[in-house]
Length: 249
Ligand code: 13P
Image (cartoon, rainbow, N blue to C red; front, side):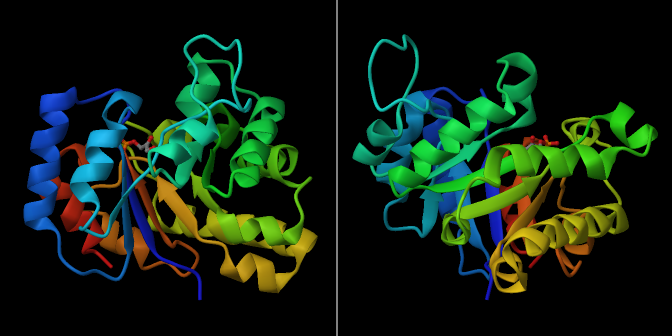
């Protein structure tokens, strides 16, 4: 059975005291749920967050990493560094990384390889821009993002991969994809995987939706057959809203 997952992507928000406050609010709200719960604080606060949430069943994950193991890459962080502080999952390919930091399908393929070689789990993000959707190209764009970064992998690798469909036009805009738009795209993504790797692999991969998921729309989005959870930006910065979304399952 594939897993339900709700992951909070804090992006570049919350310094150390703010992180400690939000984590203490999360601990107060925490209860058993039908979803795996994760948060992705910024690099400087990963260790603190990991230590504080050790016993809580909330996984602390990273927002990015470099593909090299170590070396002359000023300002970068490697998979083994993340692993050495207990981090086992990394978000790769977020549209903000693609847009502002020139991440490409090729560099992302290398990052995915490095994460998997280090036995880490990857939440791989992709999604079309507004112009792509307006011109009816959304499926072609999503298909090429998935193929270019992931289709060199063997079927077994997909045990360690979670997909996150995040239409760029829905991120931080308050404009969310309708549950039907999300379901249609998620079904297309699953079919794309099935065509290459077979139904057994495709049916086991969790596919998350991201883009203005809020307490008032999460239930309907998560009720769709091929939507296995969410990657949450803004609403993950308030413990009450985040857990309202978690509890939408
Ligand atoms: P918002 O929930 O703020 O739209 O952000 C979504 C996102 O980018 C999660 O990675």
